[in-house]
Amino acid sequence: MKIKEFKIPYPYNDYLNSIYYFECYDPEHSFFLPDGHPELMVANRPISVSARNKDVVLPNKILFWGQLRFSGHLNASGPYKVCGVKFQPWTLAILSQNHAINLVDSIIDGRIIFSDLFIDTTKVLAKIDWKCNQQKLMASKTISHLFLKEFRSNIVIKHNFIQTVIFIKKHNGMQSIADLLPEYKQSIRTLGNDFMKYIGISPKEYQTIIRLRKSSIILKKGHNILHTALDLGYFDNAHFTKEFKRFSGVSPKEFSTQKNLVVATA
Image (cartoon, rainbow, N blue to C red; front, side, top):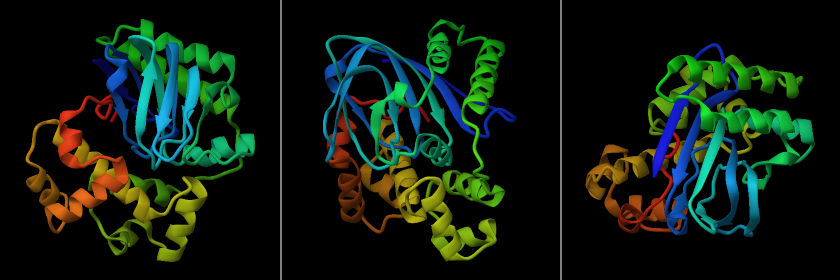
């Protein structure tokens, strides 16, 4: 698999996290895991999605992912290429409001959410020189401005909420809820309400996603399962295995040996 990604820098990252491009040569073994980011995926051939505890999404070239809590497989009739935009977690509230639908855990036709212009702009990612920072920055700037133009909202994302999400990611989801309060500067109840309002899940669920996502990346680098569990704050291997299997549908050992898209985007 050939993967390219660019983290969108300030000041264009209020709503966008990254842009990416990948080529998948072995579509029968494409396994995905959630990472807490909504995402637009534009492929060069129809791909279908088989998500655990979810209906199969029929072949489509343009998919929007609420991608919060589910795992599964991508399938295609042959090798395929994908351009993508990964949005900040709190963007889900704005997208949902604009279309009056609940997008948490959803995989739907991306054309329901985005204009042809936004989709065509995303396709351009396949043609940019990924070694040239100037081209990557220009693409990020263009997509960011287009998003702001298309998705006007009266939802104001609290600065302290954004900082709390950044804090959780920085610490790999290992902090307790109480540890978040100095960063959040409001009550636990308000924190929980804001998580449900902005991204549709509880802070504990979001922390679990971040922590297990981190563990999956570590495991893919060939690290020992027990050491990975302990390094990420699990009491023992059994606890880690149970949580990982609940999250992904497979054990850490099974996951370590199968091909997947877990490191396609950060």
